[in-house]
Length: 359
Picture 1 (tube, rainbow, N blue to C red):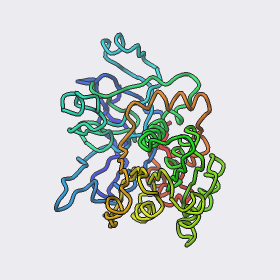
Picture 2 (picture 1 turned 120 degrees about the vertical axis):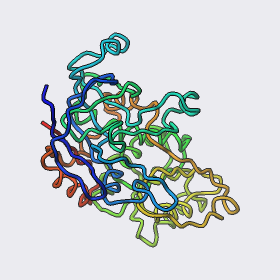
Picture 3 (picture 1 turned 90 degrees about the horizontal axis):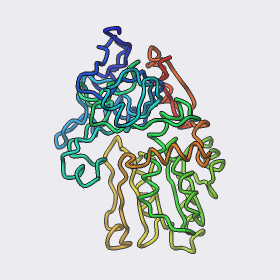
C-alpha cells in the first residue's frame, strides 16, 4: 500500500490545503476505508470561516485540533479490517459502509447510560486531528470505538454519505414530539431542513410550514411536502402562521437556519406550551428575549445534537423512497478541486449538498 494519500488538511480558519498526507494504518483501528463520498456540511463551512464555536474564545475552548482532515459525512469501501471485527459484525473487504460522525468513549456517564451521542470526550470525525481524521481524503481510519453500519444494496455511495445529514434531521424531528394534527414550522430549507420537512410529514401534521429566504429552496419545500412556504423577511410571515392557527401560533418550531433571526422569529411564532427544537450551529452569538420562554409562553426548549440511533432508519427510509435526497446533491468535486468545492458550498444559495468524491 502507498505510504501517502491525497487529502484536504485543515491547518486553521481558512487555511485548508490539498496535501499528500500519511496513509491510515490499521494500528488500534477496526478498519481502513477507501472513501466513496464525503459531504460538505454547513458546520464545515462555519469552521472554515472561523466561527468561535470551533476555534474558541476567551470563554470557550477550541473544538478543533489541527492539523486535521475535515469531513464527517462520508461513506467508504472496506479496504482492510480487523479479523475480530469481521467475525463479530459480519463486515467484509469491499463492503460499502457508513460511519457515525461521533466516536464515543463508551466509558463516560453519558455513554454508559446509552446517550453515546453526548459523549463527554466528544471526538467527532473531521475535527480532531491525530484522533479521528475525516473523509475528505482517499482513505479513512476507523477507530475501534466508532459505530459502523453496512450500507444495504440499493443505495449509492452518495446516498450513503447523505445518511448522516438525514439522521440528524430525523433526530431533530423526533425531539419535536410532533402529534397528529400539529402545526409544524421548519425554519431553514437547506439540505437538512428539507430532510426535516420530509421526516415531519411522516408524523401527519395538520399544517407543515417551511420558511426560507431563497425562492428555489421554497419551491423545493413545496415539492417535498410543505403546505405553506414563507419568506422570513415578509412582514406578514408571522401573521400568516397566527392566522393558520386561530391566533395561537405553531405547535412545533424547528430552527435550522443557523441565523439568529431564526431563533427570535420562532419565539414569536410558537404557541404557549409549544415545543421549540434548536438544531443549528451558529457563527455568532444569539440575543433573544428569554422572558418569552418562561413568563410569557412556558415553551419547551429541546436541543438536537447529531443523529443517535437513526442511521438504520435513515437508510430504510431511503430504500423505501419515503424520503429522497438525490435532488439535494448539487455538485461533486474531486479532492484536488477542494477550493472550488468550498466556494460552491459558500455560494450555494439553493442550499444543496456539495460532495467530495475522490474517484
